[in-house]
Image 1 (cartoon, rainbow, N blue to C red):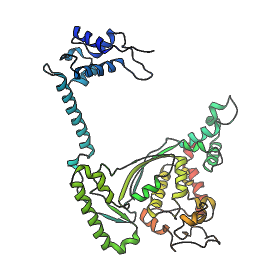
Image 2 (image 1 turned 60 degrees about the horizontal axis):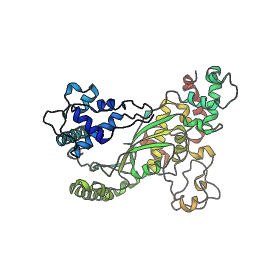
Image 3 (image 1 turned 120 degrees about the vertical axis):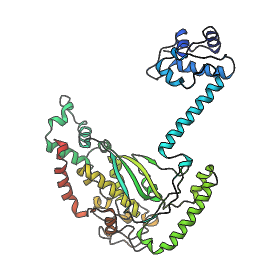
Length: 412
């Protein structure tokens, strides 16, 4: 239904005759007080904006609305603006001051006010012992959702509503296993969503992880945040350069601090001197299909060391809640049951293969090219930092068997 909003002249005339009228009363007088629940449109809101605009143009005289004439929701909106001597300009400035106070109160609580910035720290971490990953949100029963989507494509009108109830526990497990092994339509794996909070990898590792699809990311910004407390995250192999690194990091922080303190508008330009190895933190939400695709690539030890460490720790977090889902989060070479490093795509050896194969699977007989003679990530070193066992290729069958029993309660 189309609602006619009164014109400026109609509003001016009505308020001249009824100076204490609220916007809602003006709307009712012109029979346009009906709210559209489909769009949320309220004519009174539009009229209120028009009244304020007319005040600003000086076409309305000063108007004071006594508090007793306001409805409860209007009192909360105008309680700071009601005064017998208040003009439009005073009303607007008071509202602006109150908004600033509200914003500053929130920023104070969140620690983002310029005067409440963190003190400078120049920490340097070698390895990933400080890495923190937490699974903060996950589905109640992802297996039920996977099962329902898979079986919804089956025929049988009378039995369609009771697919889960009519199946045995083993039957439910069999369907879910087929889905996890990618033997069904893949969209069923998009049912479960997992949210991780991650801190302790480099900015460069974050850039690698952020390329994956079926995901939503909230990352700490460097444009409007002060990073004087930023830490440096480096591989253990760089410890032999420690003295040089300490000197360089201090010089970098000195320059950054000088630029930041020169003026708040320089925060976004000061970030240009921060390195890609600074410690990063972000929240990452993926559905299971995206998580499985990400793990297929980033669990492989030919990837950057902290990228691999973050991926294995995410898998470990899933394993704590849903062992069976974690059992099907594996590096792509374990799925292929061979080393695929140099054959990942047609130009791998031209653009992607800087390092030697990691040795998880035998090196291909025709493999002849590597810029460097060491693997990108060492599994034993990573296990030491992460503090848990990383499955080997010959362990997956046993892991699946044990996981089925651990997660059987979800199928009952």
